[in-house]
Image 1: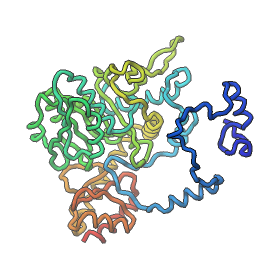
Image 2 (image 1 turned 120 degrees about the horizontal axis):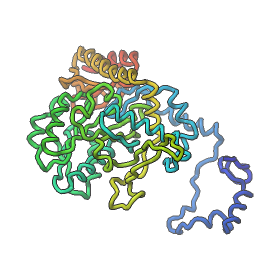
Image 3 (image 1 turned 120 degrees about the vertical axis):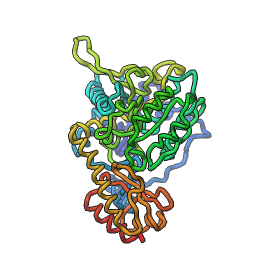
Length: 447
């Protein structure tokens, strides 16, 4: 795109000169660009923004100055957002213009590269989950969970209305789920957990023929590895409910395959690979059994053949509302996180199967090692839950947890406060040297 003369068009970033703009207006039969827009006077903004014009160097200095006011903390935060190191190769490849500027790959003739990358992403999830089909990404884990609930309702269209989730489910994820089921007959209810994992007896007592979906997570939001997934899957199957499991690609490379414990759908956040800590932005994964293929929300990339018999990739089974009649659509998801999915697939490919499993194993070893060291500090017990842990764990403090967290912030560390006397600590993306300093700082503030 050509940059015009700033003296002619008033901006160094505008793509056209005044003469070019006038020529285009003449071609479409208008006197000015303004005539192309019909904006009512009562909503038209006629004032100025009051933003001072600056050069690129001045703008960079301004933004860097603003960002420098942020606290420079070592973050031991987790609960769904993990800052794994992303190899530089991922950024170099994903920033290529054919990937970075691409939108939906509606035209397979010019999108084979991106379509193949998304196909590989789907194949990765199929291999990790053991399920037959995965879509080529969704917004985030919360919306994927919401879509799983509506899928369950479609499968049990004639009966059942209860969706069961653990009582420790993240508030934001539950709120999104409840928003999804608003306007339907579905209701979201919780079942108890013990030591941050499923209380199977309690779940059994509330699971009946009215339940259409049972949701569990591994690792849980508190970092505990769920030990009885097979029993949960059996219980869901006995009540003809859909068993939905929440996890992520790193954890799935080490833990039991969801298909082997009876999971019907796997949802979660795939941005643990390829993105780093993004403070809210994610990448929803959604995989399910092949018999539910036509119920899958979002997009699917399929492998086919072109007119010459060569292998080709294309979007297939597009069941979103803008592609078919709205009343027949499985979802109102109108876009996805294709570029983030691309980065996740690249990151997984760089690591390879062995490297991905080792990354997960390190998450177990480092979390449990740190918990053992924290447990030796006077005034702290860790971990609170008598379970194996991945990436993170909860510790109990004699002092109020908020006071401990505030004192740690002053010493350069950020942690989660999850109870009056409970803090949560995550090792993902934190160096060994930083963990050493954290243990020393916690020992200072624990009493």
